[in-house]
Every structure is written in C-alpha cells, then in structure tokens.
Image (cartoon, rainbow, N blue to C red):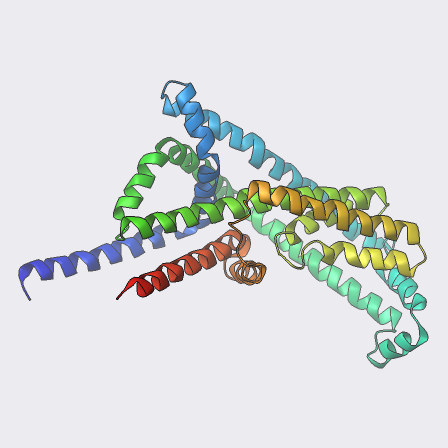
Length: 351
C-alpha cells in the first residue's frame, strides 16, 4: 500500500469521524436546524426575487424575507397553538363537570342500533354504558395529564425553547442570504456523476415542497373548513376538532374522515338527519374538492408518491422523529425510490 492510498484512507476516516462528531454536537438543536432549513428552502424564491429588486443587497432581502416568514408562518402557528391549549382545557373542564357527557352520546347511539347489534355488543361488554363512560373519563384524564406534563415540561425548558427558536431564526437568515452558495458547495461535494446528482437534488426539493408547502397548506384549509362546519352545526370543541382534522389530513386514505365520520354517524343514529346529511355532503364535496383542486396546483400532478408509501413512511417517520417525521419519513422514502430507480437504470444500461 503506497503513501497516497494510506493518506487517502486516513482522510476518509477523518472526514467520517468529524462529520459524526458535528452531528452529535448539533443534535440538541436538531429541530431548530431542521425547520430552519425547511423554511429557507420554502422562502428561497422570495429571497431571490427581493435580492434582484433590492439591487443585490442580500442582507436586506434576507431580513425582509425572514420577516415575511414570521408573519406568514410563525405568528399564525403561535396563535393557533395558544388557542388550541385553551380549547383543550375548556373541553376537559366540561367533561369533568359532566356538561360534555360522552356516555350519554354513546347511550343515544346504542339505543338507536338494531336489537341484534345491541346483543352482539353485549357479548363484548360494550353495552355497559357506565363502564364505557368510566373508560372514556379515564382516557380523557390520561390525555389531560399528558397535556399538563408537556405544558410543565415546556415551562421548565423555556430557556431552551427560546434558544432553539433564536437559533432557527438566525439560521434561516443566513440560509436565505447564502443559500445559493451553500447549495453549489453541497452539489460539488456529492461524489456522484452530474446526471444522478441533479436527479436526487431535484427529487429532494420536490418532496420538501410537496410535503411542506403543498400538504400542509391543503391540510390547513381542510382543517379550517372542518372546524367551521363543526361550529355551524353546534359541535363542541370545533377548533380542537378542526386542528385534529388538519393533522390527520396529512395521512392519505384515512385523513379527516376519522373525525367527521363518527360525528355524522352520531347525527344519523340520533335522528338528526339534516345535520348528518349537511356534514357528510360538506365534508365529502367541499373538503374533498380542496384536495382535488389545491393539491395539483401546490404539489404538481406528477410528483406524488403512491398513497400507501406516503402513509407508511409518514407514520414511521413520526414514530421515530415525532412531529418532524411527517417531512422526514416521505423524504427518506422518496430518496430511496429515486436511488433505486437510478440503480436499475444503470444496470439496464450496462452491456
């Protein structure tokens, strides 16, 4: 083994070790770095436009773009989060006081079922209304205790949250200002031929745009419309249900129907046919049209992965990475598919 090979091997090992070390150092701020990079990617077109309008003054353009990101994304999310916490506290207080009685709702549905269905439920002990009500209260108590624990944890780690938030905004500014140069350096550093390199980078940016800008926008509109129809029909906790529908809308195949379908069934089973019909028609037609109209505009018709891949990768990503996983999961799946497509094309091109 000559000296050049030894030096090259040592350099590769050193490169691998220092990369792992940097990742370990930055791990406490993973969420801040991750969402800072996502925001920078989403608002990079605005940054380029403003830099051209401001005569290449990138600092001013980046600062203006950062202000727009705060107004468009961060402030609305903060308002929704604060209001949602208040709504959860209100719903839990109504459950404890008995004003919101899920056992009574279950009783209404149970009595509306055919006798044969009631007998079937009785075999499994599901006709025991006090028992079901007790289990519902226990579940609500556990949820409230979990929410209280998380709120206490956030309160105790306020300094860490403030630091992470500041790191995210600081990073967004510099990624916006220097994003073009950083992107060129990353492209040069990737040890691939130009064509597969460009294909993977294009796939990466497409999935980020589709997952964040497209899917979140569609989910937000669907949650807003779902919460609105719940409020119109007099369903308690409309904001809470709307946020839950928006969150579930990120999952294909199941989506917001997990929330509105039981409410529609309750209306039909208790004889409130008009409310049930309005809810079903509105959710199927109006909320369904949002997905069919907005998603192709924001995401693109030819960039969508199969629904089952998105569903499984999203659930798996969230199980591993929490809320960050709904972006990381589909991104990993998309890069996996793109890499294997390139591999199969290379194999097919070989003589």
